[in-house]
Length: 364
Image 1 (cartoon, rainbow, N blue to C red):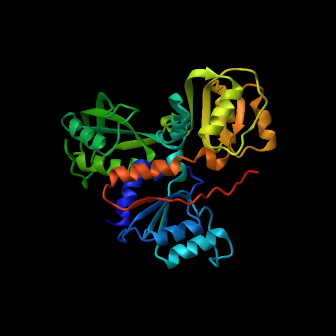
Image 2: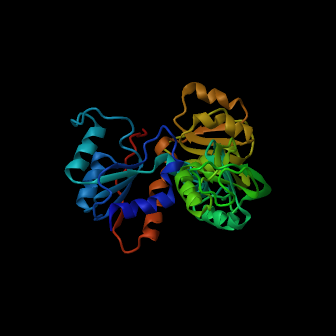
Image 3: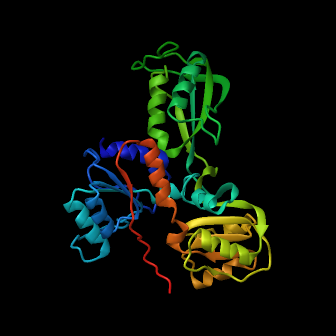
């Protein structure tokens, strides 16, 4: 099995196209065409994790956080990033990161947190924008079904739990071909008015090239007329954070203790108690201060996230209980999810869950 075969499974779990633009996901180090001897799944690909990969004969490390986040001009081993990268290179170990690709997936980091807390009826807190495009094209009535089938097979026409979604309408198309053309219908040099069908489908932006290739192969016209526009629609199944509910509300004190136990927090920093029952909860693994307003707007009773600064606790505005449960703690079950997913997909292959605790924050 090649490293690329593992990457294909990881792309099914968390397509790298789902990642935020600022992020650095995918294969960060190594040759995808190398034979894979084993996979080590971890939270952070630190130097001690690379040692663990060497000891367990794994030449692919799948990590949640990317060890390479910004550019390196020198690799001399002067800091923890360079030391990990140097050791990986010396020992022919590839590194693949998923990070916000999994954050944005509807079954990813935040759904994992909801499940750990027993929250139900979850939906995306901050849906991804400008991720949906619409293709409009025109063809003969006889060619419509062939074109639609090709577009659907390429991934177009998926809306939530529905697929093969499209809209068609009839009209009259006009065209005149010069002496260099060979029109499918009509005569060179003559103005033609022919019955045409307009086809409209939406698709996720990363599928554009394969959808256009499918369109061109299935279309009967010598020159295919089409238009692609980016929609302002939010993608309800891709985005950061989630909002969900407890079946039975609980007091703020009981809620904080429950979260501390379930997420194994060393402590929880929180805004002022409001003497209200907690039922509707927003969650966002990792740094989530940017979503405080979204949690308030969706009537959350509490918002669980991490890395909040002093003044950001004021943003609770006495409208919800704002809780910083710790960055690592909010994502603690993620590597287990990645491990379980790969293991189910690749049975009888060496997939190992890292035993290293890479949380840099300690509590007294």
